Length: 160
Image (cartoon, rainbow, N blue to C red; front, side, top):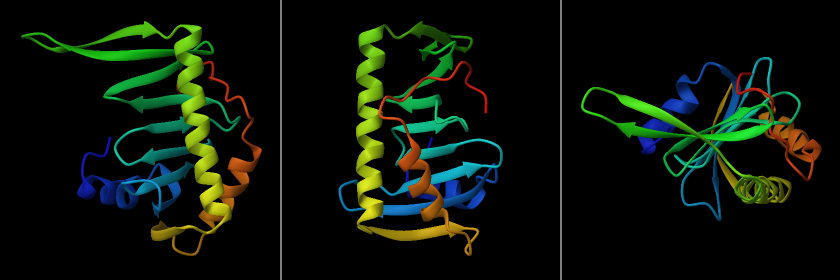
C-alpha cells in the first residue's frame, strides 16, 4: 500500500484495474485519499497508506489493510494475515477476528466512509487528480456511498 506521496501518485496514475479513480485532499485527513472503481466490482478506498478498504459490487467488504496487516473476507468473516519473518521466508499467518474485533473494525470503517460521504456532499475537498478526466467519479462515488448499508457486511470471498 502507499507509503509516501510518490506511491500515492502511482496509485492514481498506474492503478489501471481501477478504471475510474480520483485523488482527493480532505480537510480532516492528513494524507490524500485515492478512491477507484474496478470494471466489474466495487470501489477501493486508500486513506493514505492505511487504512485501505476494497469492496465488491454488492457493497460487501472483500479486503482491507490496516496497521500493517492484510484483512480478507472468508465466508463472511474477517481473517487477519500477519507477516511473520523467518530466516528463509515471510509467512502469512491467518487469524479470524472474533465478533467483537470484527464489529469494532467495521464500525471504524463505516465511520470513515460516512465522514467521506459528508465531505463529498459539502464539497469540502480538493480534487488533486482524476482518471479519466471527463468522468464523474465524484458523482459515482457519492451514489455508491449513499447505497452503502449502515451495517457493512463481509463478503464470502476476498476476490472481486
